[in-house]
Image (tube, rainbow, N blue to C red; front, side, top):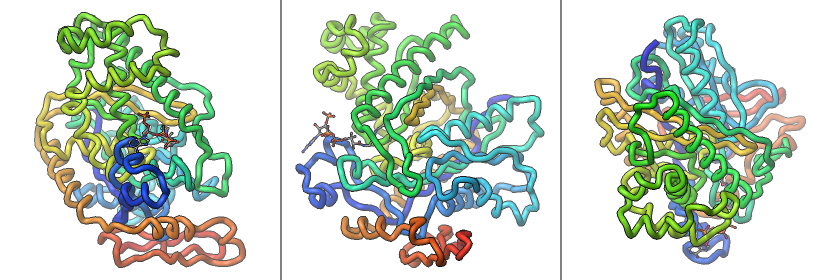
Length: 452
Ligand code: ACO
């Protein structure tokens, strides 16, 4: 198969959100800490009416309807998630309900788990299947969904909720290029060892260092692979990629990550970088040429110099991708893909562009790869579907921080489920039409869903 990649995509984020300015006041932190310090505007939130299965079903249903997909022609269905409501039954198995009517039960693939990286793993599996000798000519669907929620404390403003569904196959307008660089290690930066709690155990500063280390290794390794695979390729520094999308826990981290690519360029291709930045910009960075990687991760003046010099490039190549992330928060597995769809929602990508993509999941797994945009009807359709994202973001309902806490407190816990069935209390009327919601959990802990 040729030009394998994303043929169609849809995103779901919840109807309710909290304003980060309100959260700053509610948490009693200094004004600007979440909005300027982290770069976040709003945070999406679901009540006990929605769980990982329902948001995955909603995204899948939106994809099917927006692009009129014939479900008898799908041969693979993969899920990426780190939100667990069952230690055995997969989210994918819930999605199979949607295939009953088409009587298609021949769908390879199950759930992929590694913190925020599972969505990328699901995508790569599906792309690799289409390129393999076992491919049967049908398309694949990838669904990634998570509810990111933290208890009271510094991590709470970095929560979020969302789901992305994508159709994968040949002759795609968003081609996933084969050269990828991965970085995988054993770390304890963020993990969820308490199986009855939604909250992770998180070492915030360590998670950020791990993220930067993974980015350095992936970007540098990818650059070397591109040079080796195609010695005549023009790629030398970040200037050769038109846009960059990152896994986005919060916008400030993405801005710093983009700037850090300049640091990699400084060490690998200083001549090209100096041409791009001009004398003044380049001179402000040159003194850091020989600093060790370990020192570079701690040096706040280096970080400041990089973000200052990178600002115009960041604004043109990366900021447009942060629309959903700034307004919904960290969606975990769909985060990077929400950024790609935000970028497409600008309508500015018309074919020929190359996007650098960085996926990160704590624990840790990370990859850098590129997407090449191809023009045509399929790209026009994606542009049209994503052009509605703004309207959907603006049509949401703001809730108070007290409601946020109540939403979280009402969540089903295994404690509540013991010996009795569970009826969620959250509102149904305010859900967007077509949204799947949890109707009840019966006394055998089986979950039953309806659509709004
Ligand atoms: N106005 C403007 N900026 C402010 C203000 C203010 N009033 N107050 C603080 N800030 C700035 C700080 O200077 C800091 O900026 P800097 O990093 O550029 O120096 C920033 O706000 C954050 O403040 P800190 O006090 O350094 O950090 P905090 O204790 O609030 O924790 C953290 C932030 C670590 C990101 C926390 O929210 C967290 O643990 N989140 C979850 C982990 C995470 O998302 N990790 C990312 C990768 S792993 C993953 O995706 C889950």
